[in-house]
Amino acid sequence: MNLKRFLTFKTIVEEGSFLKASQKLYCTQSTVTFQIKQLEQDLSLQLFEKIGRKMVLTQAGERILPYVYELTRVMENIEGTAQQESSEPTGELKVLVAETQLAYKMANVLKEFRIRAPKVRLSLQSQNCYQIRDELIADKADLGVFYRVGNDNALKVHEFKEEPLVLIASPLLKGMDLQKRGQHFDLGFISNGPKCLFRQTFESTIQERNITIDNMIELSSINTIKNCVEGNIGISYLPRFTVEKELQEGSLQELKFTDEPQMIKPRCGYHAGKCVTPAMEVFIDCMRNEY
Image 1 (cartoon, rainbow, N blue to C red):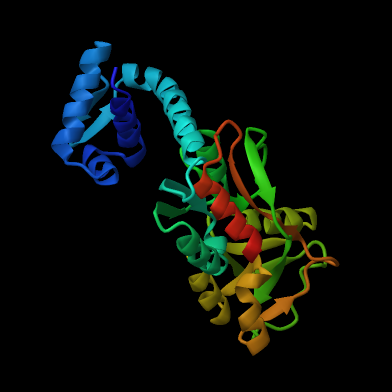
Image 2 (cartoon, rainbow, N blue to C red):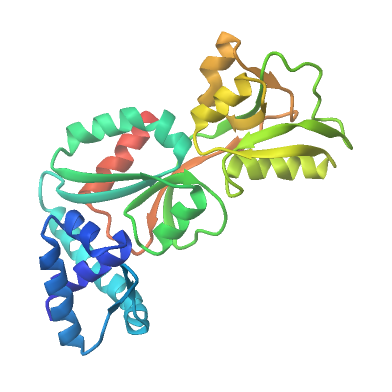
């Protein structure tokens, strides 16, 4: 069997379409279609079926998918071992990054990585920490930069310096005390979705204090959240490094929330069974230098 056809199969599943897979693999869509037809002939199985305008996995395709991931992992490990004999990293590196880290911490990391590994094709995506952990466990990405959100024993992680969280509000908001128990506030709490780690930490703390807040406002962008807080639409709970400038300028104020700051620890992780390629090593080293 042609191993390249299994890689094409895996890429279609990850990218969601034959067209996007062809773009990822730098070939024509007809080439992708031909490779899948050949693989189906090799296996005597139908791997995809058309439903509406979409090509979706058949039950047979779903059954072999875990074995395809295992096969491609072995191929990647062989390639990684071979690359270690080379003086310069090459190939592709897929990195998933938490939004706050991507927006505020990654610029210098990426700049150094580009200088040290110019031949590596870097794919960078922003996802929430739960998605990053699950994608790494499923071995669908090379590296993830995220915060701990639960069990990740299947991962190898490098941890970096802890960062404090801070409760922020508009300077117009006066006399608000979220340390006092048994209160209700008629205002909004602005954050990312329910799987946002900062939101979960905040909600857990006010629940312990029997504090209720009227509205939960979900926004995807940290900058939009900060703008809404500045406009006195609500409060938010974010890593201090994302709002340090605004706190210094006075466009935001810090509200007392805990006696000692609640902390988060950024980490860079990858599947424990993955062979660490030179490109991965360089990226992790760039993070060490910056963090």
